[in-house]
Image (cartoon, rainbow, N blue to C red; front, top):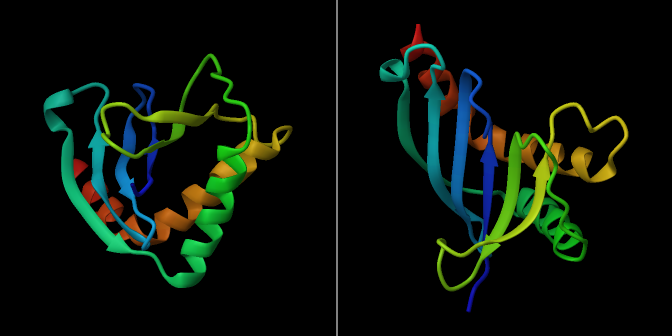
Length: 137
């Protein structure tokens, strides 16, 4: 059974771009949603489907990060801004691997590695992020 990874960004109620990448598959394909959350006027929030294919180099970098988090203890912080999880049988029962708390990267290697993962995926969803930002204006 293949393992898929979930990457979520901006899980708090703050305004801005959110991601829910529901599946990063072993072959490097991914799919999910990118949305713009308007915290003061929720009816002015937007969401769209995204999908893509990671380059072999980016997939290799992601797999290294996935392995690091898969082999470490899960600790849930107080304020979750981003999260990495994995699922095999069903997305409704993921295994949580890491929860990112904003501002912890200066002292936390795992937080820095999570931001590296964010940076990799952001390259593939940046055009969608830009469209969401323009719609919000």
